[in-house]
Image 1 (cartoon, rainbow, N blue to C red):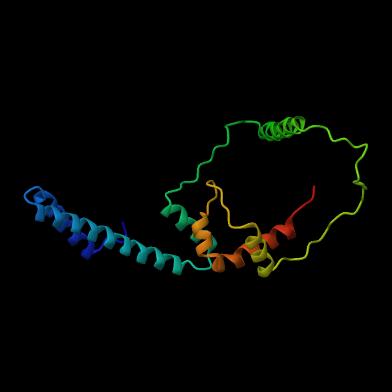
Image 2 (image 1 turned 45 degrees about the vertical axis):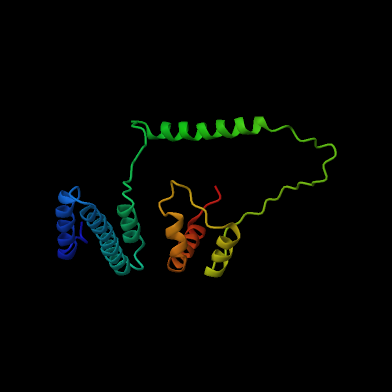
Length: 186
């Protein structure tokens, strides 16, 4: 590992020596346990310093930050698309799967009695062509109101998001605004 330096290697060497003699006496065993704790704490300190340094150097580069996080969390990108020669058929099957799934969910709901309904529905032909860009204040307000929740499948863990929201917020706002600029209602 990149944070293994001379100091850490020497402490590990000393711990291994103590491990070989830990069965001789209670003092030897306690000395060994103390060295285990010191080695663990030093490894944590060195790793934290190393990761803080590379994160600081990657500040502002989202792609590099995601790569670092995935490497630290030992996440490897897995492509699980089925093998196919007909991509159009695969897309169509995928679409049909979700249409069927939604139909099954809708079937579980009781039909609504519309005879006494107080709701008035109207159709409109208004189309939205342009969205106003969002702001950091607006996104922060949405995050605060909805809470910071992450799925286990999310690439960015909740603790990392919470601890770095101030740094990540401008990037999140940029992503939302780019999505609004290039999005389509079709």
